[in-house]
Length: 358
Image (cartoon, rainbow, N blue to C red; front, top):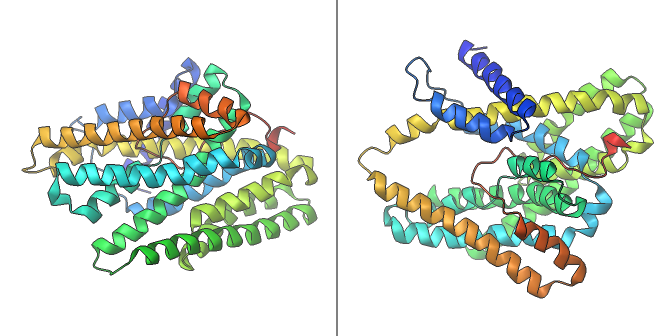
């Protein structure tokens, strides 16, 4: 392993540990420290292939988050989760894309929509940490967690469509809808198959070491196979995690006790590294701007941020006007606690009923 990667891993975990000790949002502190460290002369540039990073980091984080979600609460909050995780992402992508294209026509409309798909899903990692500290109701935390599991799939599917258009593929609106529907159906189906197989293994094998090892490997398999077949790897891992988590009380207690610290440690390591890597790219991003006006870029960034915030607030207010009383309380709580961001680590920790705590 390259020494630089090791130093980043250790440094990010140390900063995250300090943040946890002081009660601060660890992702935010890790990102800020990494942003500042990127300008130090002795800090080398890190380059990791984006697809490799995504395939390594996203599956375990999504699976761990899905294990913690109460399936009953997820099902009850599905209308709000669907609005925020699918329709709000579609709306934000369209609005951000059009605004970015008007400000910087050189992006082209597909490129601007690609940018919108990237920034559309809000960051729920740091948001959930703040929510736990504030003691938000379980229902609101369930909605935020469920949204974070779904909106990644929506965003990545849109990203795939617009990236194909930029690469020269000819796609119609119906082609895009078909790709999205195929990604959802295949992803969920593959995830359920893997979830059933893993659950049967957990029921029949009493060795917690073996079960823990398979638990670490299977999310990667579900994600890779779903993506290879044209489905959503995100939804595959989420569906598998929800199924395994819902049936977790039926498995051996020793297995669940051994899995809990394993996944918590993996979450801390992967989340810390991802946010540190994001922060360390800041200096290179500035240098890559080249002849582009810094003020032009700042204007575009501010407009994108404003679109994300205003789109979310507008969507929630519209939801409040259309929702029933039970949904009103939930979405009103989300509105009073704004959360968002364009950086994403792919998971969220939930306060509430958890298979690990049963």
